[in-house]
Image 1 (cartoon, helix red, strand yellow):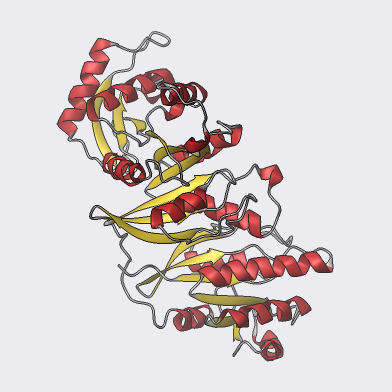
Image 2 (tube, helix red, strand yellow):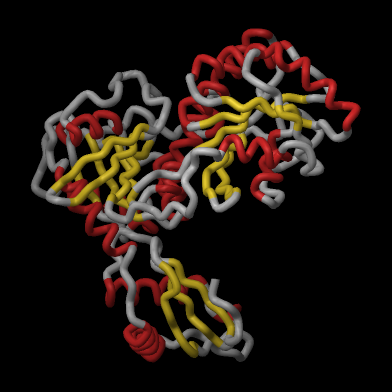
Length: 443
């Protein structure tokens, strides 16, 4: 399956990148402000132009500072955008004219070898057209005048050029391959696991945390099933993340979680469970992704007893009770102990995350659960379940139609979720339960 093309929007602060992206997307998705540097994160949007679909990246502008900081930020921003994108739109400010920083960005972009399109923004009237000629000095190509704010100028022209060789039609996801994102704190052994799974030195492994700066995809087939293994940067606490490459690497790791089918949360057996592990697990469950907990470096645990794994599992359940549904495997990337279980469990988790249950069975289970343990009344009113149906997968999304949405309390929702898991498994995947009143649309 051909993947969706990626187009990065690159430029210094306040040239109108977010406004330009909003124009492409057709809605106000990015924050727009007159202050430079408002967009700090790279944000991804899907765009359609003339029946051609692609992904656009709104990148943060280079943050002003001393000379060294500027050059480092320029390099970080431009390098990451260039690496990921198929094509690049270099946006400059037509009102202000050529800026020295534009030359620095242009030099880096040329080295990428990617097709680059020079868009001169803020050309809002015929009189300002004369400013575009100054940008030939960047040696990027013909400058194309655009007005992101008003949509006039050459916005359509530049889109025609960028998408000229893109295929028409929407890109469907490749359902044959299960995407596993390897996530966790720095130095938990994520890259070592990837190398052991692939049986080759695919990514750099070091004792220094943070060696992996980018998300790296690798394909592998296990027992007839195709998998995509995504090695991600270690996710540290926000206050310990330096601005620049590391910050972007962490953001991409989080993006990989949102795009994967199954997340493998790697814990360090020697260090145990940290608050950051709990935070990462929350990111995974909030994204509705299938989850496997892999306790790595199990070979380093000395004086193992017959119940050591059970004790560690109980500790996990006590410290992260909301992950009780997730399978736990105890592995060693170094000795390859139990590594095949990653693929075996991922397949099971994916099947549960994509499982669909018939409406009849759902209603039977929910009605029996209700009869067994009716909810308490609230201000003289009691929740009445009228109808139950499944409206989505990854995660399984169950909608309960009731007489009053406010009467389904969190504790009773957890009770119903447990009953659904008892009946249908949903092993390794969150379950989303929504309540609607009769007549509401299911979203």
